[in-house]
Amino acid sequence: MKQASENTPTEHDPVMIGEVLDLLQCKPAGVFVDATLGLGGHALAILERIQPGGLLIGLDRDRETLEKARLRLQPFSGAIRLLHENFKNLPLVLNNSAVGPIDGIVLDLGVSSYQLLSPERGFSFQGEGMLDMRMDRSQRQTAADLVNNLAEDQLAEIIYRYGEERLARRIAAAIVAAREEGPITRASQLAEIVRRAMRVHGHTSIHPATRTFQALRIAVNQELEGLEEFFGEVIPFLKPGGRVVTIAFHSLEDRIVKRAFRSLTGQCVCARPPELCICPREVRAHLVTQHALKASLAEVEANPRSRGARLRCIERV
Ligand SMILES: C[S@@+](CC[C@H](N)C(=O)[O-])C[C@H]1O[C@@H](n2cnc3c(N)ncnc32)[C@H](O)[C@@H]1O
Image (cartoon, rainbow, N blue to C red; front, side, top):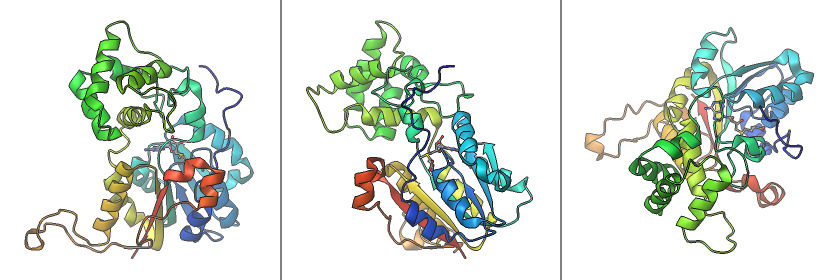
């Protein structure tokens, strides 16, 4: 397996870290979960605040990332449990561990800069790497499998649904035409096919393939599946007053979080007229943030990745 290039970051600026720490109200002896550990930026800051006596459970579905975080969090090795796990299995993890009710969970969704900037992972259209995009490399299906094997309609549907890309049909047709010449194996190759299909010439501020790459990444990793249910399932594991902080980076994810939070706070999500509403309307949590919080201008300037962040928080009643 190829290693990340020398320029690949081994750290990831934790997005909206001040807001995350304030909202989680970390204190010594606290028990917290970082369900998307990444390179451990949020985890490290939490660990510094929950000692002595605190515990941090960290999950990531990317084994390589997890091992890098383990090294970084080494000074706290007695206070961490790190697991190669999809966060949708967190209820199972908590059921099988004797930790008792927890104080808070942070979920910083999406990919890390480490994954994006590791050319061999194939997440970035700028890379010469293979068109892979698997967060969990023990999973079989890669982005190249989707691009080379799906029917044109299925490709168009993925690009439209997960990339919210208007030109999805045109892009899917261009992919199918290109693969007739030979398999599409490289990220840069796909980026060029998309750029040509969109008839973009010259420089644009956002790469024309951005939405198509996002769509494929979501499809390969089934990123939206189980996200809504996740919140309902983890609430019982929190102490009363325990909090969940979520950072989403695109509107598809943020919409799911918003809907889950509405449901947990006893609001209607079925969109029927009030007399026909079938929602349980059970209040299991309160909204701590009434609207999504965004990164400050200073943070966006220092860390452009934080530009799209939407942070929301709920508290168990
Ligand atoms: C934005 S990064 C987190 C960065 C981290 N907060 C930090 O400060 O270093 C997101 C991480 O979540 C992981 N991830 C995404 N979806 C996941 C899932 N369903 N289960 C577990 N980990 C996931 C990715 O592999 C990635 O490492």
